[in-house]
Structure formats: C-alpha cells, structure tokens
Image 1 (cartoon, rainbow, N blue to C red):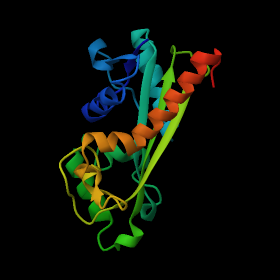
Image 2: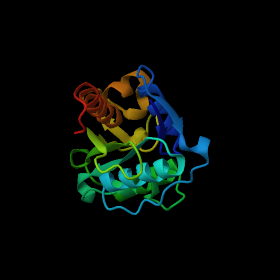
Image 3: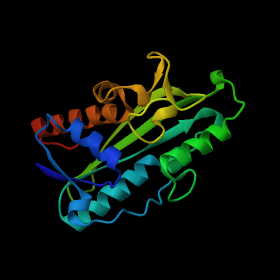
Image 4: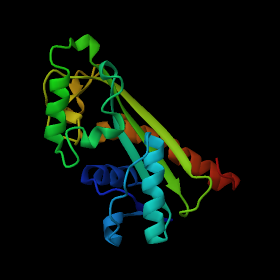
Length: 203
C-alpha cells in the first residue's frame, strides 16, 4: 500500500520513516506532491490530524496518514497543547518555544512540572472517508529545569523521563522509537490495520 504522510516537519518525517521501516506500507512525504501545509484550525489533536489527512488525500488522490501531537503541561492547564509548534509564534523555532515554556515555568518546583507528550495518528483511505482510523498515544514525563541533549526535535531537550533519568533529547533513536507517544500511537494504528486486513472491517 502507498500512502502520503501529511506533514512538512522534518523531525516527524524522520520518525515516521523509522517507524515504517519494517511495515509493508510505502510512504511518501506530501512535499513530493507539492502539497502545502493545511490550515490547522481545529480545537483538538484529533480535529487537526483529520484536517491534515483529508487535505493531503484530496490533493494527491492517495490514502493519507497524518499526526497531530504536542506537549501538555499540567501547571499550565494543558498548554501549549495543540499550539505546541507555534507556542512562541507562528514561525517560532524549537529553541524559541523551549525558551518561552521555561520562562512560563520559572520558579515552579520540579515536582509541579508534570507533563506529557500526546500524539493522534489518523489514516484516511480517501478525502471523503467516513470512517478514518484514529490512534492515540501518550508519554508521561516532566519539564526539566534546563535543556539537555541534542537528539530529537521540538521540546525533547526539556522533556524529562523520570524512569530513565534523562531527557528525550538524550535518548538514542532506537530507544525513543520504542517508548515515545508517536511509537505508541503507531502501534495502535498498526493493530487496527491488522484487524481490518484480517476481518475486512473498519474500526
């Protein structure tokens, strides 16, 4: 099966390619088809993932896979949430988003910096697919007091995993791909795809 990945985020594309390495699905980035980014005006991760998947499928006439993901910080009542990639502005860099988040948590003790990554992955067979497959994964952690590590992207340098005593940016790709929010959502998606292929039914 061939599908278009509805993202222009290079970090996400690299993770998707690694996650699909051993799967019989040929994926292509939407940039190969000159598909512009969709306008993400949904109010939830699910809504934005559906918007992106439908947009890419409509413009390529291919099945599409899209994810919407972000960081929720309990002390900030779930922010930055769906606005994670543009927390410091529409064209903000990862470093600018991290700086704004650390400033917002300045003086907050580590015990109150509980956070999690959320990821929703959607697969649509065509743009009018009435039953898209939806999978969700989350990854619990905390916000570190300072950035550490050079792997990954986004908020990885300040996303601290207590059981591993390091940030996500200090993990190897192999380790991250086994425990991240995106890998968990992907596992749910693949399980649903497997059930569909064997039973001939969706959801």
